[in-house]
Length: 290
Image (tube, one colour):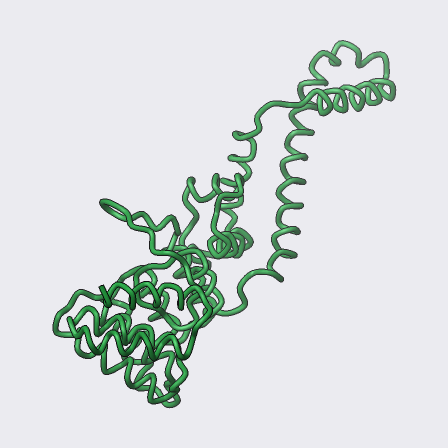
């Protein structure tokens, strides 16, 4: 099986973070899918397992000695001159077997764990949304997280190139791929996918909302007005679609339509009065009033 068949190989950093338990859930799931398919990455993983824990513990050494002693009892006395070499060779052999067993057990565990991994591209995006809020506006189905302000270049901390293969494996549709690239702020890819999704039969409020977010956050002045139209279209599809109501108020703020923004925040709070999003909306409304 070639690399193209099972996606981009894992980096050394990803493999070590996998062993140390430092990967995000969605990246961990994608890594495990890849490890099942890729002999090269499994071999590299085995190497890192030995590097990260190179020493033989006292218990392991005693076990090996006991096995060597039992082996010695069964050999003929004439083989005594070779016994000096037996232990090192046996240790190497047992270490090799142990490495194979560890990898085998790990693969069995990975296969079992796949029952808990994302079953769809939509679930992958949703997992990413639980880890990261990319911008002030609100994607469909996005759980509330505070905005984290950073200086300089942003490091997403997520291997999106690895997850791109997972999205393909899970047969992501246009809306899902658009959302995936939107999370990365890759507007050049996100917008075309979302525009395709909007033209598809049955495109609902979520599609219009997410396309509006892409237009709003792209930084392209020519697309800014189109963002407002998409949020309004989403609310025409579903008057209670809270994400579009939130984003429309934010759109009015950014276009310096203060009175409309204030009125829209109030409308939003009529839809949602108690969530963390509502707390944020209330703060914005208070800011407009002062």
